[in-house]
Length: 240
Length: 225
Image (cartoon, rainbow over all chains, first blue to last red):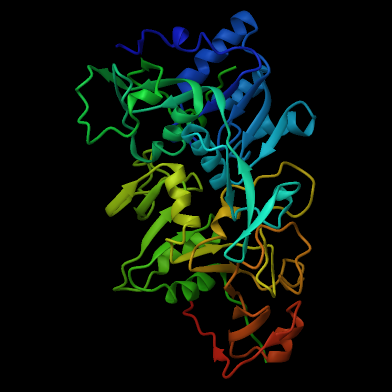
């Protein structure tokens, strides 16, 4: 078994029009910028994939990554907790013009809905959002005298994830706080594609150190010197 | 009598005095983050940030940032001894699961029954909630740190919130620029106030009845300027 994909172009080739795409990361930490930019390249060359639903904690920053996807016109809907950043213009303009849809989810509920999808749990109750406008229309039930809101699993067709080390079986480690949503999204997508800084042979990662077992991963592509969203923002890079 | 309201670092200092030794604490983005600067000497406090770090310290020197190591406000952080990383579902399990001792948030309004409004002020613009609706549930204490009134002098402590709610009946204590107030059985219970500020004047700046049970202590804070 070898899950290695040789190029970024090949890694993003299967993402189809109208797909639901999870993208890992929290701000720039753990964000798979190189996979995102490869997908933008494909869209610019072929017009596909279009009308994507993108799931991420945020909704892009500056003119790179998810913001560049939005600017390119590939994204029909964002599912996120916090569509703001140091430069949220890309999403804000399209949202206020009615050109992009938004499903806003409390951050912990977003994480748990993704986890639930990966774990085969169709729904769960959480205290978050009870009594607020984000719970409108949702079922409420009391447990031990306290009210909880029913939330459903959140699945995706594809997940783009950023790891640190990967092996040929797809076992992964992460770097610092770059873990965030990445391990959850690996579990919740039909097809999970991971960019890692280095791919080594299976057995090269101590089993004690593996964070995401390779069973949750479909393909790994090596990007030895990955781009960092925050550094791109600070140097004013535009990917458009 | 003249009085001067506390500045944000002073409110943060006051809130910091109440954090117990060995506590696990989440500080919200913005003014609550200031609390860490005033951690009393000799107490070991472990800070949680919802993007998956437990045990972080001050910001690194400029140029020393590693942008994979940030807090929920997307600011670069450093690690403390004994730090750990975990994914987002575990991070919010720490929050909702009752494992944190204290969460501190900012506020647009706090109601006398403990309702909090802190995520949006109306229906215009782009809504963004982040982790606020999760953070108000589960911690043993959920405190607010805020100016006592808005910039144009309207009370932020109110009978009933008029802005969209973040959580219902979730706040246990409020540290303001004028007072320390507990939420107690659906009412505001005044614990401390600025010594030169009369009760009547404080009441006039508060949008709901302030109750007193026993002594009201003086709210005294170092200058810190």
